[in-house]
Length: 334
Ligand SMILES: [Zn+2]
Image (tube, rainbow, N blue to C red; front, side, top):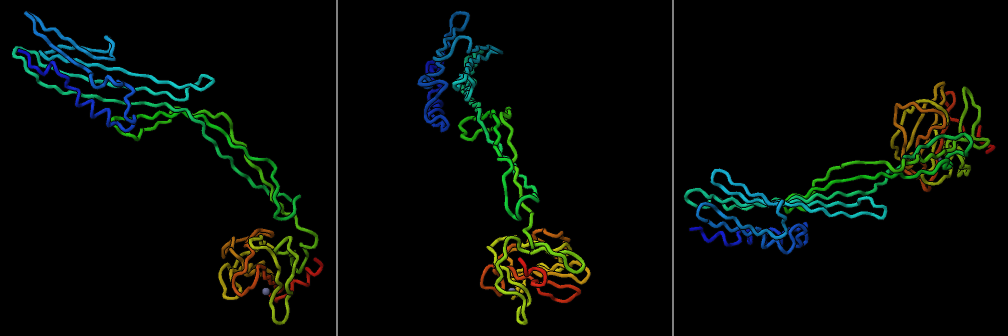
């Protein structure tokens, strides 16, 4: 009277496909192991006035199995979970895996015995808890120091990276290899220490001079090598310097030109007011733009060899009362 299907294993094929093809598990099945293939053999025998259900579910304990008879439909289901923990030497969890699986079969056992549904399902969710330590980068703060020679740097305080302990929970659904990751907690084990860097602004003797209507600062501090001073055929002083050295504003004012010239290359003109003006040429790059107000000593460009130039230097022109003057007038003694 009972269909022979009850004596077979409806799940064989299903589990074969499922477990051997599960990429996240590399062919092994942590939850059901080798028994997966024989999972859930169910026999239902009809006796005089009742049914006898014989369930063979290797790997499952009795309390993991539920048999439910409702409206003539018998449902056998089983569920189990598996915990795998890894601890570090201090006994803290560094990895926790929890597997959860479930399967069920339903039979219709009404007056006329038919199988309404032999639909196995197995939903496997794998949850992995990871505890990792993540570095926290430190910030660097640069502070001007009048005690240090111009453009020299001193580390006042070394930076130290901080450390966070972060717990993530990765959940793998079905046969997906890509987990949904949730940050469970983050604990700062060590705060980062800010790196403090001092930048020198102190100018050497002779690099600040008094002129008409204000003071002048030598535009490439620390570099005293002169290729040539202003002459009848040369409009400024050429100051030899390393590529990238800072060029600073000789006095405060407003940048009136910051751009390119076929001969000057990258150059800047600053109007200091009162007929005072300066020009800086052949820069590798510019640090300010036209219209910008600058203060005396502010970095406005970096030494290069752009335009009509044969080596790294800063060509520097000065104007007082609207007239071009030689820097030699003020800086001869450098
Ligand atoms: Zn020149």
